[in-house]
Length: 292
Length: 250
Image (cartoon, rainbow over all chains, first blue to last red):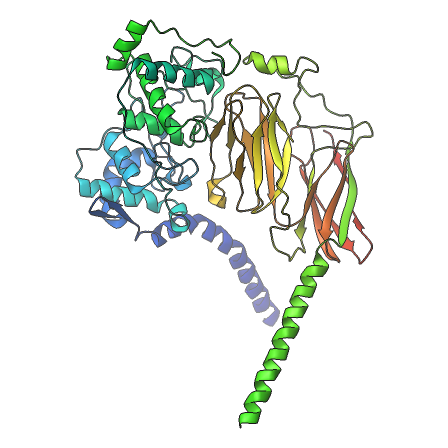
């Protein structure tokens, strides 16, 4: 009788020892999320609270971004790259559209702007129909998915100097920057997303991804103001092949490049008019580096 | 009463000084004493390493016109020595993480990474340089959950070196999106490490006497039956530990 009891005790202990780590693995994420439910965001003078966004997230976001914010919502399998990028995995805390340097967390404003603006050429719509408070709450909710916000501070936004007046010389200088740093390797000499490296690009998770095509009338994913375009190549789009050029393009040259990029875009612009008058030729990909 | 206070004060001072001396002494002894050496070999035929089509970028083709580039997944020397194996202490190391003040260089040369595998200590500063006349983007892909954060920076011709560190031990793949064949590794470990040379030889320096487990890591590859191996090693005063490893070809 005694030995039997002991055997049962042993068995129970063994089963518990086996089951415990399995249980903790399964519940770890939910538990982690719960521990960060007090996350806040600060956008202007609005304070967002993660907990307040729970209902909105369930209603508007969960279908794509998933219960655990890992981008595995029930609609995710229908978004096939490279045409449509899959929903962001918020747990990784890696974001394309930032005002902060590559490898750093975005600011709360950056996330707020992304939710407000939506992403052109993706399934992410604009959410400007939600109130500012709701969007700020959702920013806090997005942040609570990743442990990064518990351990790190957002990066310091890069300095964007005031935009100078467009001149013909600046457009020409921008063309030289485009040639020197070899934007065309992916984006193509005419910005048609057909550079020699375009076809083999993959994102950080190994999924195919296409470079931005300047000529088909769509808006850049991270905004279409001149300042947005400046920021895109000076911070890089983390999680994608687009690197940061902050170390290799000086601030004044960066504005020149913005003006040149405008000449490639199909939308009407002052820069496009000026380029036409200048009879600006595309860069020569066969010229030795630095001499295009 | 006063006397007693004095005695206590003197005693604690003596104890403190002794502790300090012990602590410093241990540190001084730890540096530059023992080492672990050995050879890593490949058992079986060296797998064929496919040549790389660099026609995407004429500069890269030209840079390699002397000896066409090939994949560097498994590099085997004439005596069967296996190159680019990282050896580090996986158990028994009690010292600090950053033991080295050396700043290793990860160069982009002829559209390849030199070295193909860069071993690093957590917190050690390294430099990314470019020797090429074509634009690269240097894009390490750590798992952000480990505390190492992925970044992606361009290096056009003549770009200044980039200085970085990795916070935590992790095997980090590094890639260039512009030249998709460019694939290297940053192997971040805690404590002293070594990488095998073209003959498969290695020496881990600055290992104080003690009992350790050494791990040999080779990049994941469909050509080998396993990618890590471990061995127990004892380092005695004035007597280096030895650990030879053999990886099997499939």
